[in-house]
Image (cartoon, rainbow, N blue to C red; front, side, top):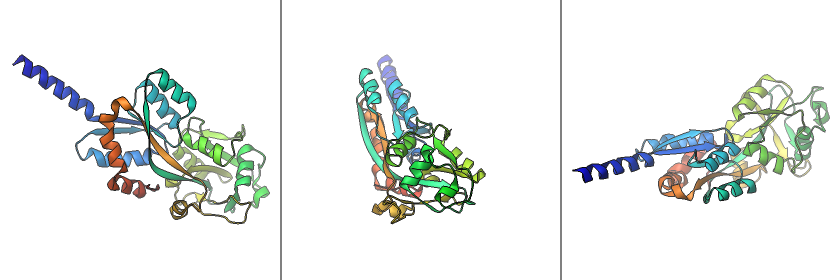
Amino acid sequence: MKKIFIALTVLITTASIAQNIKLKGSDTVLPIAQGEAESYNKTGKAQVSVTGGGSGVGFAALIDGTTDIATSSRKIKMNERLKLSEARKKIKEVIIGKDALSVIVNPANKVTKLTREQLEGIFTGKISNWKEVGGDDMKIVVYSRESSSGTYEFFKAHVLKKKNFASSVLAMPATGAIVQSIRQTKGAIGYIGIAYANPKVRELAVSYDGGKNYIEPSRANARTGKYPIVRPLYFYYNTNVEAKVKPFVDFVLSAAGQAIIDKVGYLAL
């Protein structure tokens, strides 16, 4: 009887571990992760919980062992890889979908399009008034994500060409805060994942060829490659929890999981 009790205890403990999967990281990936978790939890195979905070926050949690999967809108950095290596953790990288970044302004702003060079000028502080880019005589109020955000890293690398943001840029802790601030500020501009866009802000067309062609940030344009600001989205996990997390990861990559990515406004693989 004692042996049976011990075996049953081990079985219950193992099952309880398998039923809890933690995801933490990117605010961009957050709507995807929440949608996937909600659907997967209904299967009864696991209980998946999701929190945001930024890609850097996710990697920090992966390093200290407080999350099973780090969600990210950028590739892992070398210093993060080194910390994981020092902690004797081997990780796997999985691309789960794609995202397009939208540059947004207040709907009262008459500017509807900008070149990449103009965006660089605005976010680095060289352009400070909307009249310099065809708008009203009005100060430009620039919003950005915090430096721990993968969206911040991607925008800096691919739009600013690795130039530094101006010191006057207002850093926000979450994408939703950027949307809300731009709704309330006539001269504001910022950038968000395409799924966060709504009719209370205006998305700008962007040109990467010096103003010859301006492309709207639609999902159709992002899928065909016409829209230039597109990036992959990632899951990262430690290989020692692979048996626990892989069924969920496989679900996200399945037809049903990819349909959820499309439904919440991102781009399936």
